[in-house]
Image (cartoon, rainbow, N blue to C red; front, top):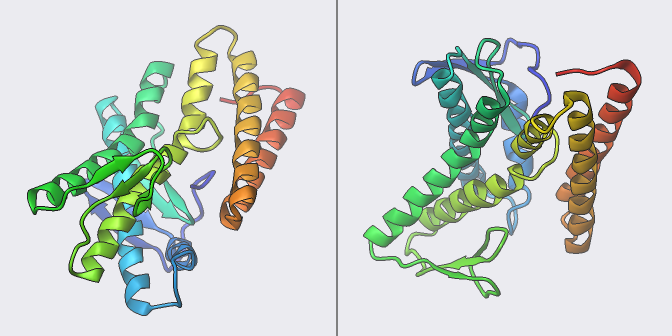
Length: 252
């Protein structure tokens, strides 16, 4: 999750994925290590490396989902991974609200499809995931709990659990109507489609402030300090954007 494309550095990793240029800023790897600190138990190099692989593959796939939709709408996108997320940047794709909504949704959908593939492989190999709204379960994914037969290899088990967590739970969080998450972009386009674009953007920013504030309060109750910090910051930046937008004219 980043707000704008960061400057290039000498430590960037550059390559192409399915023909799309990809640049990985060194802070992306730092973010992977920091987020691995949220895993239970003492630091373990193998767990950190496996988490970094899950983190990288999941976020790259998410951005490739955006890029695929941008290409469909005539764009020539490139991807930058930095910090806790990334950007699929496209200066020449369709700017109509309906197209932008589909482009925004394509990232989370790509993650949900990956999670569906993981669950399908579990079924195919004899493991049977079950869903419960109340728990107990192995993995909480936002609206309920997943549980299934324990995989014999701890390392495979770890990759499966973290892949489902990132691509389902993070995907759902990313759909919240909060700037600059994908849900915030969808919210902006939906509001602007209702009439005056300026008023629509202001309304979407108020929704962003309220939703981010609610998530920060929820994180406080759960003692999830990373969530508290992140969403309090997003509420603040949405408020600052609203003040700037209202005071100096619109942006788009």
